[in-house]
Length: 374
Ligand SMILES: Cc1cc2nc3c(=O)[nH]c(=O)nc-3n(C[C@H](O)[C@H](O)[C@H](O)COP(=O)(O)OP(=O)(O)OC[C@H]3O[C@@H](n4cnc5c(N)ncnc54)[C@H](O)[C@@H]3O)c2cc1C
Image 1 (cartoon, rainbow, N blue to C red):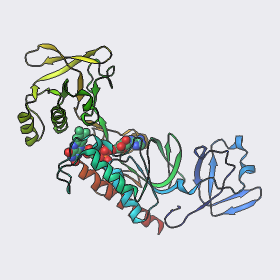
Image 2: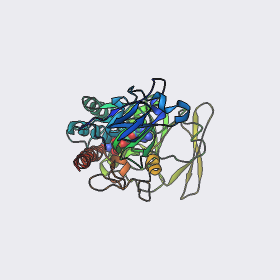
Image 3: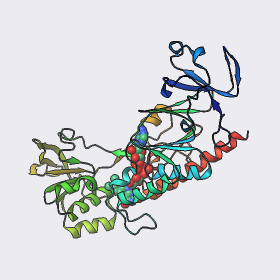
Image 4: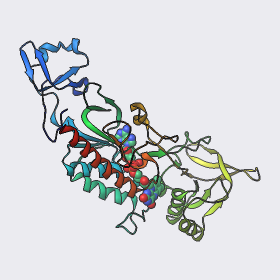
């Protein structure tokens, strides 16, 4: 096993014309070339070996560039991933964080965060920016690069992380892919997405100042979204399918004080419009009455679901809701694969995500250190 932070294995390869994602690391012992044996190098398997005439191209060029050989790769740069990256580098692991968006994750969408220690009240985006600036002091964060697949090498203890742009070899992986917004499933939802339908009041609320909007949902996030929209001057109606809100008491009180109109026991049946949203059809489950009323914005906040495609591909154990099962050290059922943050379910909050990221990176360090001394 090659551990970057203890001993960098030397690699050889072919001409620059061969792109690195055509290559797969398979073994790290020795290799017999036409020119004689080479010992102690990483062997590179070229996927289309015959096409490239493997013997003639192994001339000693450096194909596996050093930056593509990591001890730990963190997938996702939300609070969990950024913290994992920072802890990992500080413990001495060569680390890369790969993020499909711009980093910060879901916390970017929180209008205000009042329960992250050290900040009495801070905008989610501002907190995310502060975290990113701090993490970037230590770890490289590749943004706008989605991880598409992670393969476990059967022969060696490496994992290969394939993104839409490249591939990276690593000894360990932290999955901190978080969650995504749950869809309402109402008629018109897909059609008007981005044309009046939004899942983030902080991101899009500005465009609806002074206009009638609805917020769908009854939890903390929905109430916060409703309050935010009300504060910036929207005419807000909250639609909730039950008789009682799930949101924390103090949020419910704030909602009442702000005078947000609530449609109880009601669901959105259809969102209608032309070029943009114009109205919503609601259905009162108790009275069984349908009503259509004009709105220009529909903010959907009915919860999240785990982003678990990579975990499923890899055969990582998940609970019945699709959240990754990790132990107290954030280890999954796969060796050297850890999970942190909202993707593990439980209390889905920034403070927990950060803590789990720190634990995951520390576990990775401990495991790699133990393996390297075996
Ligand atoms: C409206 C709202 C209000 C909230 N308010 C609060 C609050 O007041 N206090 C609080 O503590 N929490 C709050 N939260 C919750 C908080 O935002 C989350 O708990 C936190 O962001 C979870 O962090 P995470 O790193 O686990 O996941 P996320 O923040 O979801 O980050 C996951 C990251 O992984 C990336 N990713 C996913 N798949 C891939 C892939 N294949 N390749 C590369 N990157 C990938 C995503 O782009 C994302 O950036 C709120 C959330 C919302 C929506």
